[in-house]
Amino acid sequence: MSSFAFLIPTRNRHDILARSLPSIRRAAEAVGAAIIICDQSPQPFPSASDVQVLHRPDIRSLPAARNILLAQTAAELVCFLDDDSDVAADFAVQALALARREPDCVAWGPVVESRPRHVRQLHRLTQLGVFADPRRQTPGSVDRASKALFGCCFVVRRQPAAATGFDGRRPGYALGEDFDFFLRLPGRKRFARELRAVHRRDGADRASAWMRGQAKARFFRWLAARHGGRNPATLLHLALVLATAASGAGHEPGALAGVWAGCRSKGLRTQW
Image: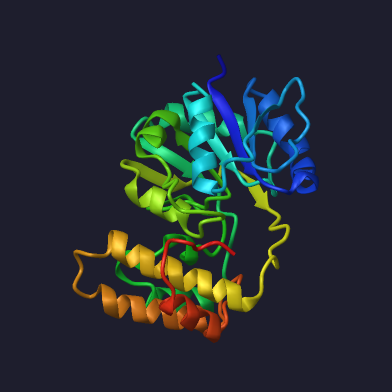
């Protein structure tokens, strides 16, 4: 039984996944790790001797696919990867070494996004309370404790991850499902320089600014209800973070009209 597994959810992006597999294979071979893919596409990604493909077109949500992948492996340590992420050849070697050295830590991840100083300052001023996200404050690769890691590439101990679970009730891409998972995952989490990865962000322009704005507004409302109920200042913090979402700042800016539409809409649907 492998002590490490790469877990990759994907849907209708076989060409993108094929670009990522060479680097993942190199990292897996270094430690004899498993590679397991949960493919939600109508037609499955081709299996191989070193790649296990779970064909689940009946699954319509990223969080549900993550739960299925967790249930499929008995590895002590798992790495969740987006299908457009590349990892260093020593990624699994370094992850296993971190797990041995830091038994009190449950999750580690690389910094795959960095923001200029003025954007970090904007988030520091407007992302307060439950919305405070340390991932938006990273200037580059760091060794730092963090309550949340980047969902496109992170390593986590399987048992606490399975006990926490991802919120499979949320449909589609489910913006922010990784942040919700980390808020509920007990134990220490941190960024680690030893872990190197690149999130290519293939298809980052997959939606209009209106759709992104609507998805962000719906997610922030949901986050406030789920995790911010005990803080009397949450409504003020929600207003600030919605204003920031409508400002056009960030990697995937939203439009004011989309944010307004998301504020008025109902339901859990936060995909774009």
